[in-house]
Amino acid sequence: MESTRKNNRQLFLDKEFLATLALAKEGVLHPVDKLMNSAEAKEVEHSGYYKGKPFPFPFIIAPAGEKNREVLTTSYKGEPLDFVVDGKIKGTIIVDEVFEVDKKKRIEQIFGTYDISNPETQMFLKRLGDIAVCGEYELQFDDIKNVKNKIADAKAQLGAKNVSAMMMNAKPFHRAHERVIRITLEKCDMLVIFLLKPYKQDALSYELRLKALQYFVDNYLPKNRVVIVPFENTYLFTSYKNAVLDAICASNLGCNKLVLGQHHSGIGAYYDKNEMKSILDHYEDLDIEVEIITEFVYCNECKTLVSTNTCPHGGHHHIKYHAESLLEILKAGMLPPAIFMRKDISALLLSELLKKRFENIGKIYDAIFPNSGLLESHDERDFYLELMRLHQTTSLT
Image: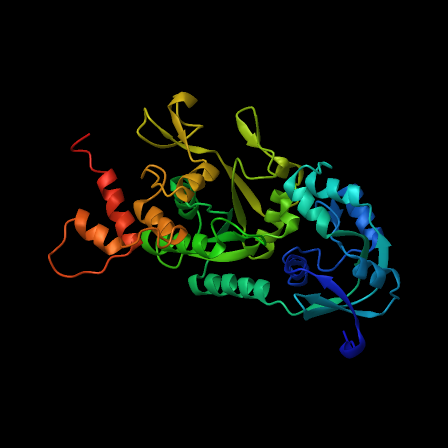
């Protein structure tokens, strides 16, 4: 594909659009490997299939903004247009076709409803225009390629045949996550954890979530059998059918099994004759096995972590691993009990979330905790770790 870049007109995109285009370009959404034209988009809209394979909605881009609209409405077949992201040229598309997009219908395709009170819908509407473009394109975006290479290298090094995948927010990483990881790892040669990487500010940053998850993998699991990779959590995956997309992506990235929790968004889990079913059962030709794992809770009677499927005690005995609530506890500066999270994970997260919370943490540490009498340096993480050990001391309770 050639273009005389110096005189090209420009389309202004954000990094999320760029990452979405890269997913297709790198084969992660196969058989979708390009932007769909109007005829293909209509076919997918009506059938839910593309080239004989499941795909939940048309793969198109219709960037918002008056400048973009003006460029697209005056473009011609074969015209090269540059993709500009944050002031830099990041790719080029050769226009094949431009066509109108029904914004209301597009919202319904992705979210299942036209509910403009939904914050995700509002955010998507801001970036959605009413003119789509399709054509061959090239990108300067290596993140997806790097993920593919990392998984392929790890598989080759292990000689792994059975590779399972999990999509995870780990916001925050807790004991139920641990249990699902261990159960999954027992049944495969290698586990790929796709850690979701959002495109908006988050109370628990991707870097901190990765640090906590990597700490667990390095210290509590067999070496080299778990690979953590970033997954570009673009607007595509806000879809109410995102479990279908997760399965497509995991398969195309070299995994032959996808493990999902029953509360995974877009899964639509339900029971039929004591067997768990989901939206994925309507797509029998997905090229990957999908396993749905039931919810884990801590039972006050069983005194351990249990599946709600195997515990005979009622919900009034169950302590739930509700990630949003655990995050609120951490943000308030409180240490979650060890039933919820490992003490070293809690210490790691709190020390990063509330940096320099104490004026002189070393002085407080030495004043409270036992020491050898020698001058030692201690930081917030050491402090929280020792504090959690005291929380777990039962001699005076």
